[in-house]
Image 1: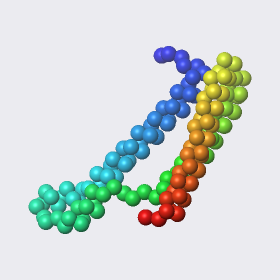
Image 2: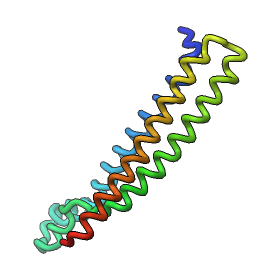
Image 3: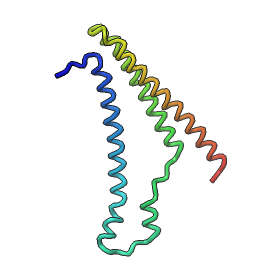
Image 4: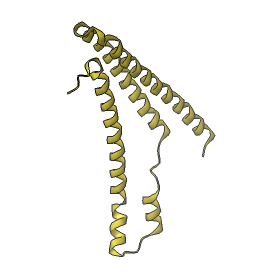
Amino acid sequence: MQHFGPFAVAIAFWVFVTVAAVAGIVADYKKRGLALEPLRAAIERGQQLDPAVVERLMAPEPRDGRLNALYLKVGGIVTIAAGIGVALLSFFLAQVVPVALYPVLGGGIVAVCVGLGLVVAARVAERHGNRQEARGP
């Protein structure tokens, strides 16, 4: 087995991010499938379908822009905290493996930058949502 050394923490972090993203995609796919299951069952039984019901089931879920901004903000805060934790970990890890300091510290700084980007995106989304509300429908 290959020894990853100082890169093990960075690899574990990106594996976690990838698994979290794929899990979200799979959850959305299954949720959409469950929402369409009654429509599929009605078609299989040969029942008459009300066009309004079909349209409601096929329409995408309405999304609240403020809620998306909240998710971005929470994600940014969690990512910043994780980045700070990884950066602090680099100093402790450097006591055992001195060469690990800069790679792991760099990973923590990247995570903090991503978190800051999410917080900025949340503010932009909030401002955009507020402008849309002011204009009206």
